[in-house]
Image (cartoon, rainbow over all chains, first blue to last red; front, side, top):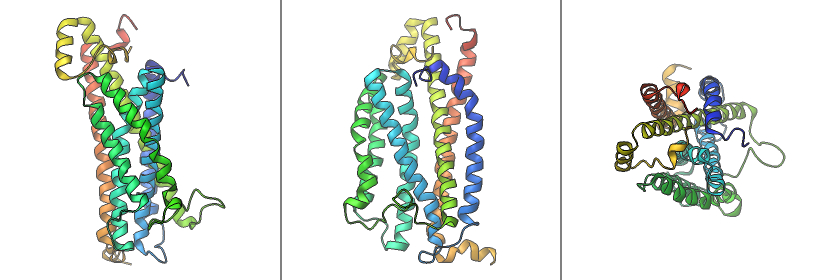
Length: 260
Length: 57
């Protein structure tokens, strides 16, 4: 793991992996959308609204996966102070927030015709709303300090503490009475869903997962190159660079070493 | 089944199409922002010095 946690090595690997990830994401979404919208039957109870599932469920899965990624990277950043871990957490956070928002809105649009309400304050929905607030708090803390490294540390503490919410979301449908249906894919005895509906669901999930890695790695690459550029500029002209960066709110002493 | 029937989605068009529209908008938007930032970083680095030619690499 430590071999890959070197920023220079990460940049080289990302360079090679990104085109493949992009192709896999595109192919996944084309196939997934075909099966979700054309190549699958309506549900015998829910009718066509079951098609919302192919957006809602993968979005919710990736939202939780992304939070685990942010939490794990934050823990690594706090424990080992590794610069790549900070970058990984910061890069993934907005992507996870987007998937969380998508899961909440699509769930709401599914709830209205099926439950008769856009929103209910039950355990699954409330804990998922909390996930959105954790993401927003994480992003706000990252940008709340003039000294970038202080913002990253506070954000990392929030992200690690917020990890407790992930099992709460997962098991909320078992622990409390809820309108939301319980797990039907990851459960004892195999998935209780027709293969014709499982296919678009899994393809969309794989596509969303590829998308998450694609955009997260693109953002990590961008952030590492920005740090390298700050570092170069600082080396050329320490005094003016220092002043400009302090005014712009970008810390160079800590993050400047990332790109080398 | 004709096209109008398909887009009506059994009467649930108002719930299904906005879900997909938001998905497409959000995912494309987040991707384009990331791409723009990456392009800007690559351009800036290319302008100020090629990292491959950086003496301290």
